Amino acid sequence: MSATPAPTGAVQIRTAPVARPGDVPAAVARLTLAALDPPRTLRSTDLVDVVTVAHEVVVELREPLAGFARERGCHRVAATRHTTRAGDVVTVVLIRHR
Amino acid sequence: MTTIATDPTRTDLAVTDRALGDRAPTGVDPGTRAGAILANNPIATALTAAAPTPTALTPTAPTPTPLTPAAMTPTQLLARCHEGDQRAWDEVVSRYGRLVYSVARRHRLSSAECDDVAQATWVRLVQRTGAIRNPESLADWLATVARNESLRIITRERRAMPLADPLEGQSADIDTASDPAAIALRNEDLRLVAEALGHLPDQQRDLLQLVLQDPPPSYAEIGERLGMPASSVGPTRTRCLRKLRTILEGLMSEEAPSPDRSAGGSPRQAPRASVRAVPTDHPSTQPSAQPIAERTPVMTDAFAIVRDAVAETLDLPADIVTPTATLVDDLGAASLDIVEILFRIERTTDVLLPFEDLVAFVRGDLAPEEFTGPDGRVTLDGRRQLLRALPQWTDATLPNPLHAGDVVGLVAIGNIADRLDARLRARSAAHSATHSATHGCALHAEVAA
Image 1 (cartoon, rainbow over the protein chains, first blue to last red):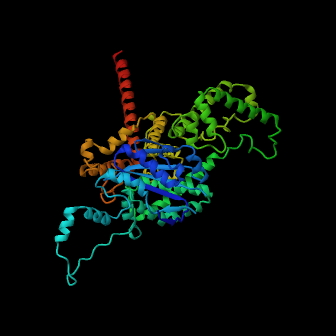
Image 2: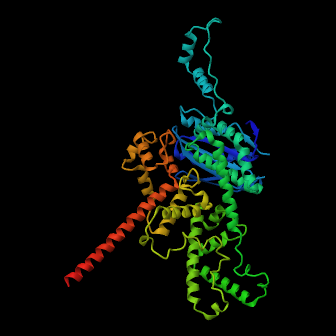
Image 3: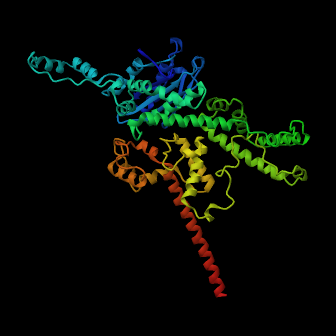
C-alpha cells in the first residue's frame, strides 16, 4: 500500500463498488477497517456494526476496535452509499483528530 | 501526520471484483485489465499470434495514454469519484484538502472543530459527487460547504452558551447572588423546571438530561445509552424540549395569578436556564395570534416559514437559507432532515406537505416509469417536467445524465415555499368560500323571514 502525505493530515476516504445492496454492510465494514488500519488482531469485520436504512449507513465500532479508534482520535466514521450507472458505491470518510 | 492511502483496499476489493463480474475494478487501469483478459484468453492469444508483426517501417498508431488522476480536470475527477475510483478520491483530497482545512481555520475554529468541518465537507461531497451543478467549480463548492459547516459549528457554539441567568444582566450594582428575592426567584425557576421534567416520560427526561450535559455527549452515545437510533436523537430532543416548554407554560399559567409574582415589578419570564436550545421568541415556534388561514397568504410569508423551518432543522443561520439554495446540495439536508422540515412546516401552518407530495410535484403527471428509465436515469420527458416544475434550472444547468435518486437534491427552498404558498392560498380560498356560503344562507334566511 503506497502512501502520500496528506495536506490536511487526517482525511481518509475509502470507496468501493458493491454488487448487490445486501453486500453494503460487509463492504462498509471492510473499508472502515482499511481506513482505520488496526493491528492484525483487531482486523475483524465482526467488530464493525453496519446498519443501512435506505441510503443512510450508520457505522458503530465494537470494543476493542472502538478503543483503538478513540486512541487515534477517530471520533466518527461516516459512511454513505449512492447509486451509479454501474451499480451501488459505498464510501467511508474518516478523520483522525490530532 | 497521517497518510492518505493511494492504493485502495486491494485485498478487500478482490472479493468485490469477483462478485462484479465484468465490471472494471476500482483502481485498476482499464488498459491493464484488458491486457490481463487478453493474456488469459486462448482465442485472443491465437489471433494475436496470427496477426502480422509490424515491421520497423510500419507507422505505429500512437497508443492513447490513460489519463492519470493528477492530470484530470475536476469534472473528470468527480465522475471517477462517483463511480467509486479510489485513486480519484485520493487525488481530490490531495488537491483540495488544504483548501477545506484553511477555510475552517479562517473561522478561528479549534483543531478538532476544523477536523469536524473537514469530515462533514468530505461526507457532503461523497454524497453529492453526481449532482454538483458545475463540477469545474469544485474548489468553490468545497469552500462554500466548508464555510457553511464552520458557520454551523459557530452557531451551535453560540446556541450552546448557557443563556444568562434571567437576573444576571439586569444591573451591575445589584448583587443578585445575595439578593433574597433573586435567589427565591431562581429557586422557583429550578423548582418549576424540575416539576416539568417530572411530567415527562422517563426516556424523554433521560434524553434531556443527557443532551444538556456539558460537554454534551454525541448523539451516537446518547442513542446507545437510551437504546434508540442515533438519527432519532435530534428530532426526539426537539419534541421533548417543545413538550417541556408546553408543560412549563402550563405550570406557570397555573401559578401566574399569585400576587407575589408581580411584586417584583417586572413580568415573569419563562425559566430559560434549562431550555437553552429552544428560542422561545422564534416566529416559527410561536403560534400566531391570528390563524394563518384568516390572513392573506403572500409568498414572503411562505418563504419565511420555510426558511425558519430549514434554519432550525439544519441548525443554520437564516441568512444563508435563500430561495435559490437547494436543500440537499447547498444546505446539506439529509432525507430525514427533509421530513423533519416538512413536519415543522406542518406544525407551524397546519398545512400538510407530505414528502410524497413534493415528489409528485416534481414528477408532475408523469407515471414513475415515464419519469425514470429502466437504467435509473430521468427520461427526456422527465427532464422536461423537471424544467417546468423547477424553473430555476435550465436544460444546460440540469445535470446530465440525471439519476432519479438525485432529483430531490435539485429542489430549492423557493420551490417548497411555492408549494406552501399554493396550499395556503387554496386554504384561504376555501375558507372564504365557506364564509360566503354561510353568510349567503344567513341572508337568505333573513329574507325568507
